Length: 210
Image 1: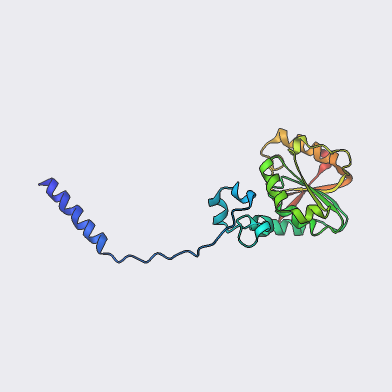
Image 2: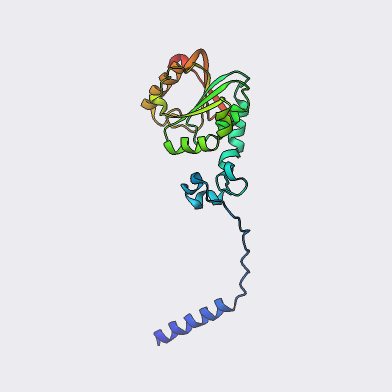
């Protein structure tokens, strides 16, 4: 008897569910992507397609485009708050795909920005999206961890260094942070300044105690 009651209850539930009107599924607009871009093909499709990315080499139909030209409000506000002017020598620490570096390059005239990141993949992406800025001589990228960073022959000291969401500078890794600050101080001019996120929208780090 109990088994019959369970079967009847299950049947009634199935009839109730099947009788409910189903809402039509809204079709998402289909977008064609150009996968001839080797950079795009090397990246996870789901991650970039979800953010509607495309590539500068094949705009507007390739999926890394926004990675190259887009800029978030957070990054935009940070860059706008930096004391930039034409001719400055700038160092970015933890550049990722180069979004902030390109924005800075557009604001320093005949100046120069070197952007570093410990990730080889990040540097590869940054270079892929920054061909014009690199060709102009205003921007370059280098794979390096800030706690190991040293100037190369031909490098000049920097006027400004900045970093966003870099663990070595936000207090998460104190020992690495101390090494990083020493490297940054050695790469800056005596009057050089270091800015990180966490302020409104940035804050300056006092290097006199580094």
